[in-house]
Amino acid sequence: MTNFKQWEGFEGRIWKEEINTRDFIQKNYKPYDGDSSFLAGPTEATNKLWGALQALQKRNAPRTAYWTWRPMSSPP
Image (cartoon, rainbow, N blue to C red; front, side, top):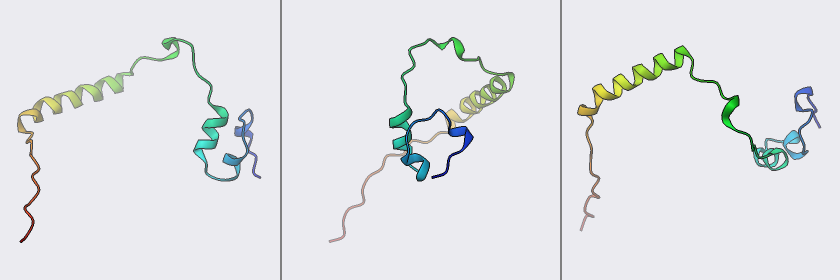
């Protein structure tokens, strides 16, 4: 079994031997009961990108076509 330094402190064995996300989560999930004070606000780059996206959405909204799907009738 491979053991990397980065894995120290994590529980479980199966996820270390094969790709097994479920086992990793089952063995290592711990609920967070704190608040959101650890979160950082958006960066200037994020705000710039979000502004550009909103401008594109406004510009494209009138051009958006809504299609209704209708099944074709079956051949006789």
